[in-house]
Image (cartoon, rainbow, N blue to C red; front, side, top):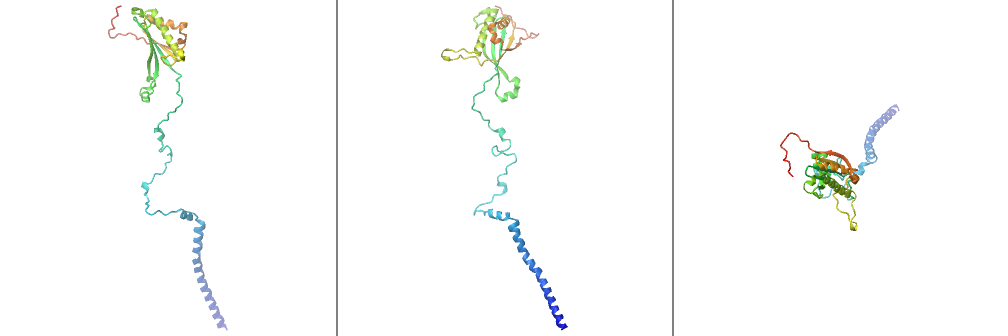
Length: 257
């Protein structure tokens, strides 16, 4: 009886040991299947999206190398302007609106009086519109004068030695004042037409004297009268440009009348 019990216990223990050896191998065989399924389907859904969006190349098509592909957009590059700073070389757009009227038109009235004649010249001060000349000569040297009108003793009706007299200077000044007044308030002709003036209406005038003839005093005193109120109100500066004689070359021979 005892021998039978010991034999049954031995067989039972052997069966348990064999069952224990078979259980780990079964767990190892089933574990990879469950882990692979959860990782691909649940933890990495982008794998399925990339597989769905992938398109196989067409038959006969070639794949370009990276060196032949278009470069990527730079950080400061604009879709319209192209490369950064390309707008500096763009062609300026000219507006078709109305032109701006200049509100500043300076003039210079030159008074040349010698022992032979009295000449008044009205010149307009203009600036060069070329950008290269403005950069090379500067803003101060960019100004130039353009003569728009002049009156002399001969054009006023005086002949010979009478052109340098006091009366000739007065008549020359009155004619110049009349021309400047027509520039400010142009008269209306028949049919509503306006006469052609010497230029735009002056906003200021610089009076420049040169020479010590009798016409110098005549011009100054005539501008102080009531007939020249319009011109006198525009004078902003008076300059004496008479050259000072210094020892130098021999002067010209005095004219014999």
